[in-house]
Image (cartoon, rainbow, N blue to C red; front, top):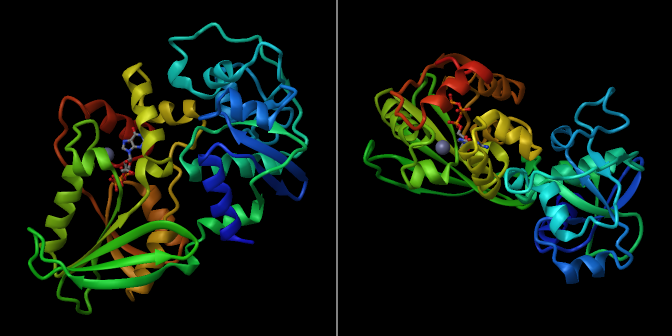
Amino acid sequence: MGARAAARAIDALRRGWAVTVSAADGAIRVMAVEGADAVTLSDFDPTAKADILIAAARGETLKLANQLAAADPDMPVLIARAPWIDGDVAMTIADPVMDLASPLKGPFSAKPLAAPLAAKASLKLARLAGILPAFFVTSTGASEAEVAAEDVDAYDDATHLAIATRARLPVSTSETAEIVAFRSPDEPREHVALVIGKRDDSLPVVRLHSECLTGDVLGSLKCDCGPQLHQALHQIAGSRWGVLLYLRQEGRGIGLINKLRAYALQDQGFDTVDANVRLGFAIDARDFSVAARMLDLLGVAEVRLLTNNPNKVAGLETAGIKVAERLPIILPANPHNEHYLATKRDRTGHQL
Ligand SMILES: Nc1nc2c(ncn2[C@@H]2O[C@H](COP(=O)(O)OP(=O)(O)OP(=O)(O)O)[C@@H](O)[C@H]2O)c(=O)[nH]1
Ligand SMILES: [Zn+2]
């Protein structure tokens, strides 16, 4: 079981297959709303009775709350299936990007969750699978994979991450850099570290860079990732020695497709924080224990951290790496990312 069961479940959900998710309070059988079609849906749910499970924040937009919301505001919401809710309507429930195009939804009614912990584990699986956090739910029927809540937590546990290989990698900021690649048998994301400069007793300058395909590779002006990446490499090269960790946490941990959905919401006027919440995800779903594990494997216990984000400092320290100093990384704004940077300053505590 463990991470292997979670890997199977994630794969099954992405393919639109049924998965049974169990927890201490019971089991539910789920299928992603995203990607369901008439055939897969009637296979999953021949009597068209499956309810729909969504994240608490999505429930809020739809004016629905869970019976346990007062005790736990993150408690998922179960929407009772009505005869007029077909696959297309379910998709409008799942995807907030469609809200402007299909505003006339409902009335929906929420019903109590039979297994709240299993429901929560399902939503975490959605994030790990990079799909929308919305599922058709039944209590019985066959499934392609079975997973327990603790398997889901084992999946992103960085304990088994190990150095897979290392090689010289001359880069424009440092001709003597070394790249170190990390892999875990538990999950497919391969992280890398670029070690720059000559290692000595001084504290390394470290940057945790979360993957941003649009900014790092395509030169997106919507965020500051690309310039920050290059500035960080430059600053590390200018210090005695340091490490850039390139973490495969695209979209602050919600994956590329969901980040681009957040961008579509930003096109509709929501800021980066509200867009994530509207999709049903945390504002920042990253877990910096993977970074701590990488530093540990590199023999680094204490760092000078290049960041404006106090949560990164806290996350790394919680995971056992001492942050002796926070070094700011400040770059000029452009007309496209001005609002994004202001939101980071005003709403997520970035010290800009
Ligand atoms: N979900 C989401 N992710 C975004 C958005 N814009 C950028 N990102 C992601 O945010 C991450 C970049 O954050 P970082 O620059 O590592 O970190 P930070 O929290 O801004 O902190 P700093 O260390 O101060 O830069 C990348 O994974 C990007 O893909 C957005 O609007 N929505
Ligand atoms: Zn970016």
